[in-house]
Image (cartoon, rainbow, N blue to C red; front, side):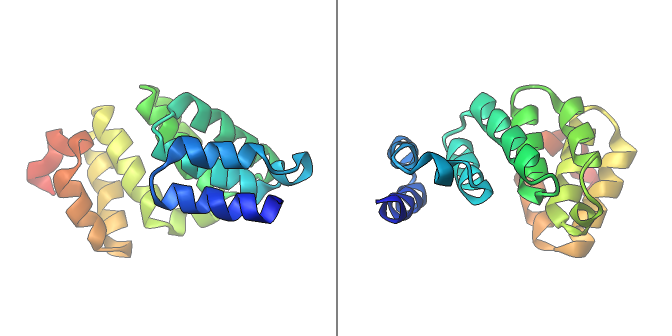
Length: 154
């Protein structure tokens, strides 16, 4: 039953059916529900549903279970940002493991958070690091409302 529920939850997530995906996860065993991979799946579902407070709580749970989980930092910070807690979002990312700094999303998100906080120079520095790691982030930056104040400099 649990394997079928997990496959169904993943399928519903791919279809954007958030409530159905979450309902499937409630049918898995308690033991499996606490598995870090399942917690991470729940986090992705909640984020797709823009359920930021629940996503933050789930990211915190993931980090308790798996302290070096890059998605826990990236998604937890994003949830904080979406909740209007941008300085906390930046601080959470900066507390992450060293491997996080190899991820272009880390640098891009730091750049966005710095821009929102009015720190133009550090925002540009972080964004340029993300572009150096993955040039496709430059395209994201052109459409990102968080970067409106510094778009001309990108």
